Length: 223
Image 1 (cartoon, helix red, strand yellow):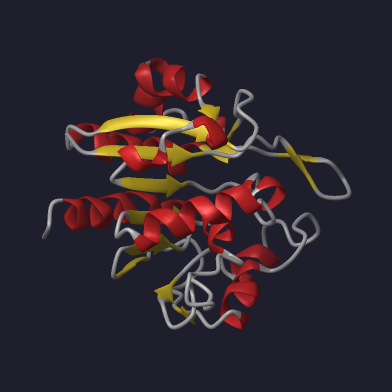
Image 2 (tube, helix red, strand yellow):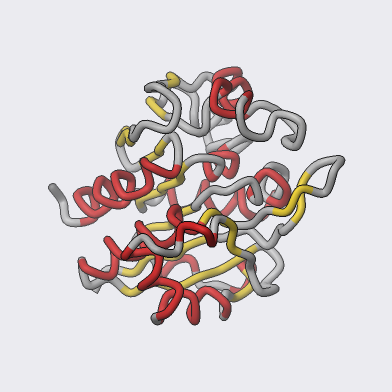
């Protein structure tokens, strides 16, 4: 059985106006459903080990979102362990969902960066979607290069942010990743886009979360 660790944010407010936030529901629930259907063991960890928050509960009528909220998914997410206590070596992959929350507690989290580096360098699969790729920012590999340097990736775009949370985020994610050498790809705002480059899989926005999981599964199954 393949094992995957969701690394979720603990933040519930962001920015100078204390905008309420959390992990964006479909970016957790849709990948969870794909990995669950594939028969994978799914566990949760978070930077602090406190109970994570969910955003976008108004989307609960989506079948996979509803199944997550009323089934085992949300129960398991509430039991997320502190990342520093997780046995990362037992996992075949890690996945970081978005929502604005990761911009708060993942941009500068040194332990998280070291965790991602370790998984990536041992050829584990690393996936992230929307604002989740902020976790890839400032990850430096053993050869001194940025993880995203020369990699085909996507994340929540500048144009999307301009019409969503520009006044709340501490920096522009597309710009930051591009400055570290990422080969950045976009489609029109809110349309699905997921990209695999080696063992790194990223997606642009909530509509991309399912595609990220599907590409991660293909890599994990050797396809």
